[in-house]
Amino acid sequence: MVRRWETTVLQRAGFRILEAADGEEALQILSEEPGDSPQLVITDLELPTISGADLALQLELLRPAARILFTSGYPDDALPEPIHSLKTRFAFFRKPFSPPHFLEMVRSLLA
Image: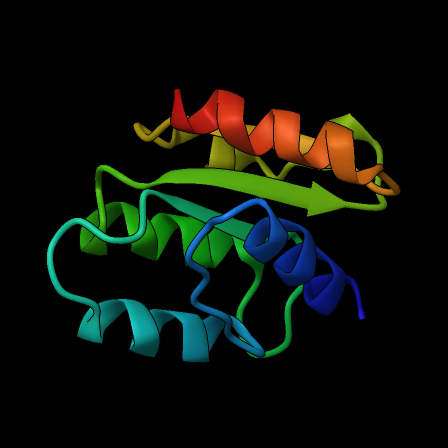
């Protein structure tokens, strides 16, 4: 439900969205995507199949230029230690959030 909401907010703001149900599907989609797309990957820390942290570590190899936005209902200090070693630019956004704040975070990561 949250993924659908985020997708709707971003599409209405004019962003092109690639959507995946879990981390493994995200990696499959990204491995087939040409060029440097996507510029930003939005993931929850808790995912079916693989964690958001593991997804981010694999993305660093697959799409090193992509920025990562982690979302979670957990507090900011819930970021697993491996995430802090990421060379890519990442941010953490705590749920719940409003559409304007969500778009502001996305735009700031892409700036």
